Structures are given as structure tokens and as C-alpha cells.
Length: 324
Image: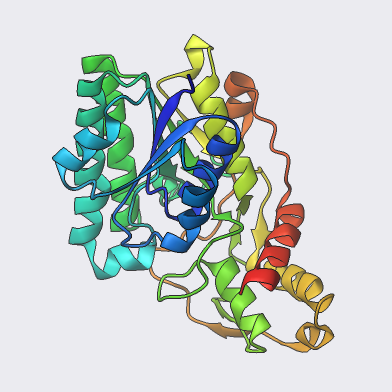
């Protein structure tokens, strides 16, 4: 009998990729999503391809009963459901708080009561806040710079308290600028890579916030899936009840990103190589530079990311070229 797992936010970008990987490796997957940001088109192929091992539950993590139903009979929880985006949290801090803290606490309580083996959750590099230390090391953080960052840090604190108080096992993964197939290029809060890809494909100039020298540790989706699987399967007692950076460990400026995109997209349409970006003001709440140390994950989880930023970006561009 296959192991049953829950993926909250399973119709979203990261969640649907995780569901697909788990299903293709023989796991029984239940997906919980309210479709606030998730998309049916991400999971309809999974419903069709895995009718015996994929369950879809439409529900909201802000409703405790939905959470209890979702964890029933589940051994592992991958908690991906959240309202992302720093600008969204600045525009609407109350909803961000309700989902990312209230919903997170509901999932912890439901998982505790159901006797879930391990609770793996999406944390965020935004937790490092105004810390100027590079690379970012898990134990050294600064003050949060946005409501979103506060919510993701509070989640880490709650997970730790639940481990100490109730004995629940957790692993938190601080995602660093994840990108790849199925990341939505549309809407007001689209991430930079899909947004820029869409602009270039439409022969429009992408707009860079600031001078383009802000840098990020862009992390391809398959590295993130690898980390989630290691978090679920590790038998190292020192590896649980820990927070890990989930990244490649290399930083890229926005100007470099634009050059890579012009290179890869220009191979498909040479006129794209001539499109020059425009520049606007820096965005409120943005961290200037982000670079992860992945030494802790290497040491405790045997993490060895397979995809560099450039390799992942080439694959992502190929996907967008076929699907946009």
C-alpha cells in the first residue's frame, strides 16, 4: 500500500510540481487548495493520469475543519499553501496574516491531532530581512521588512513550539526565489522571471526595479522538489526539527537575468535580443541581495542541487515557449 501524503496549496506552482513528482514515484497524494492563487489547469492532468492515487479536496486552510479532513489518514504533510508576494502583503496585510499565520496554525493543530509523522513546510528567504550577512546562514536573521516576512518567520516559531510542546516533527524549507514550469506570468503579483519572459515574448521591454544590481539566489523548481523529498525521507535524527535554506547557492543580478533571457529567448526569436529593459524605482520591502549558504542542507540532508540557475532557466524558457 502506497504512503499517503497531503500537499496543501497543491494546485499552485510549487505544490502542483510536488504533487506530480510524488504521484510519479508511487505516493498517494491528497491536494488541498481553495484556488485563491492555484489553478485547475495545473492539476487536471494529474486527476486524469492518476485516478486511483490522487485526491482533490477543495477547501481553505483558514477553516480548521477543512484542515482536519485533509490530514485524515495522512502520514506526511507538505504545507505549501500561503499568500506569497511582498507587495501583496504590503497592500493587504490582514489577509496575508490570516492565511499565512492563522492557516498555518490550523494545519499544525490538525496535523498534531491526526498523528502526522512529519510536517514539512514552505518557509521563506524573506525571513532574513535587513540582515546584511552574505551568504545567508540559517541561524543569523535580521528584522523582517514586510508583513509577508513577518508571517513566514512566525510560522517557523510556531513549528518549533509545537515540536517542543507536542512532539510533532517538522522541517522548514526557506525557499529562495523559486522559478520554473507553471509559475504564473499573469496578474499583479507575478514573479520576476515569468513576468520578464512574458514581456520579451510579447516584444515588450521588461521593467527593472532600481538599477538592476539587486541580486537573488534564483532556485529552479526541481532543486526545491529534491529538498522536499529529502525532508520527508531523511532518517537522520539530527536533521528533523530544523530550518534549511533551499537554494542553489549562487546569486544573479537582475541585469544578468535579463541577459540570460535575451540569450535563451533570442535563440527562438532573434529579434528579442535587441529589446532593452526600462528601469523604475526600487520596490518597497525588497531585500537588496540574497544568497544562501546550503552547507547545513548538504551536511544534514545530503542535499546536492542538480540545476544551476542557467540550466534551470533554459528549461523554464523552453516550457514557457511551448505553453504561453
